[in-house]
Length: 63
Picture 1: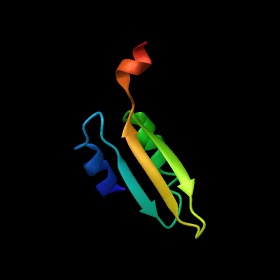
Picture 2 (picture 1 turned 90 degrees about the horizontal axis):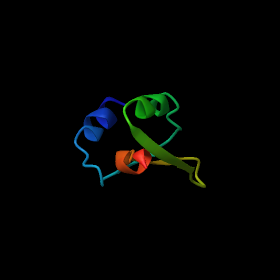
Picture 3 (picture 1 turned 180 degrees about the vertical axis):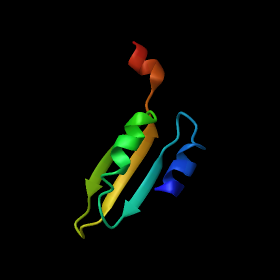
Picture 4 (picture 1 turned 135 degrees about the vertical axis):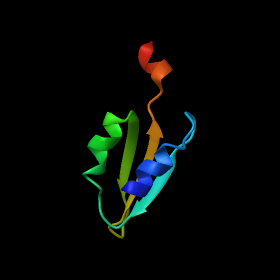
């Protein structure tokens, strides 16, 4: 989780990161929301998870 947070700090508004994990990272989700990130989680056929994380578009939220 520490590496995810470090990487998120380097993202530009239009960038995202994709995680490939063997289990769903439930503790990560509230941290992402608190820091202004959204996520989409997909479970694969093999039971692994793909999580796409990107910054919330502040301009779109203000409209």
